Length: 157
Image (cartoon, rainbow, N blue to C red; front, side, top):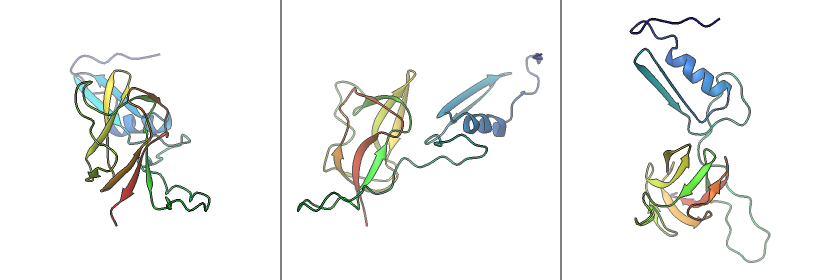
């Protein structure tokens, strides 16, 4: 049976409990508002398998496997920037604005690369390392899945 707390009374949730719920249920985002207090947890990337106190994985995956030896340039050192959630990929903040980044652009750590819209929320995806955008792998306005590669990036060495 649920109990009601009077307005202005103590919050029935602590920040740790809200974070634990997000981790336990593998949620990318969770917002709870009660008694005039709002707690919003946005995880960088939900863990692959739910479990208590699991750490969120970074938006960069391991280097790509090296392609077959056909004379092509090695891509073993490139990093993939993956979608941290299911949503719609946007290269620019507005339809008439230039893209955040283009192939060949140098980017700084923390620079916005794109937006993934999920449930009417615009989630800015940032570079986790400085480097150069080698390839944009998704078309503007295309739906993306959790973990789907968005960009290939050559990190600064």
